Image (cartoon, rainbow, N blue to C red; front, side, top):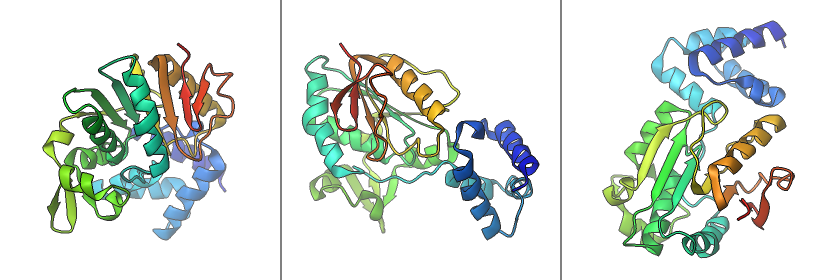
Length: 259
């Protein structure tokens, strides 16, 4: 690999998108991006970047690939079941109105899943659900709220009937559920965090982050949580040093800020 080519590519990407690849694991990202470049006939990072920035759709597809926007409703259903039966009822015992953040929300499946859970548990209460992502194009898809059969495969038939409308071979989220979500562009590795959250979900986002970037992110989440608030991470993203960061273990993959 030409190190100068990689450095040039990183600089161009950061200037264009504010994505800092120094906070990602270099070997994995280099391999991932070069595989994509070679599939498109390029063997240099910077040359491939110069090509994709010339076309809006190509560039949007590149950023979506780079930021790993893979999602589905109720992803890892057993963990969402714990969220619904244990975590959220516990949080509601301390506060009747919850402030929730889906960080790295991708196509919107996660915050919409949350909205359905909250609607079923507290039908007459309106909670705040913030959903953020770095990718502007993917946020547009999230706001549109239209999904394939595969993306909603883990959902119960009851919820599918109550909260979606069939549109050809796709499914549109009801306006009632869409109105529960506040979408926002946010860079987890650069932008300031809000505070006062009862629950933060950051799942399947940090796979290529460096350990230093992960620790800083989880420390920032800790500050953003209320005392007693809970961080929910992905099923392959256990925080091994959670005690050092100040958390206690609530359940596997759920970490709590002490009261």
